[in-house]
Image (cartoon, rainbow, N blue to C red; front, side, top):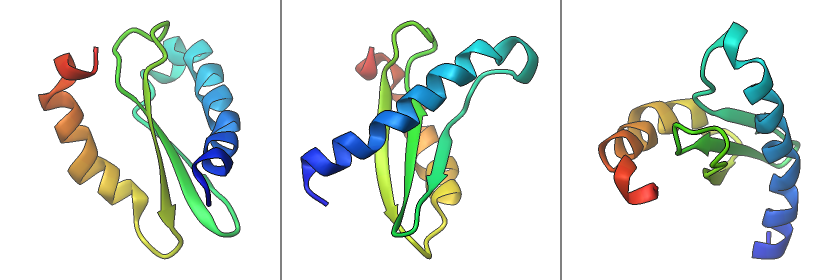
Length: 87
């Protein structure tokens, strides 16, 4: 996918994440969201503790990989360690 195509494909994921922010009192904080498409996985990971800041890392993954493990084991620890960098 081109950068433009990827950017357009991520818009629905961002909207989904914004909807999750509305139910956080019941469900807790959103850790990440993964969408499964026919040809790829797409993930949005909030970086800011402030839901109004709406800072996300958007990633795509090839089918067949384990995006949840990549996010949980690799990306989230980096975000937590360097959270000030993302603010």
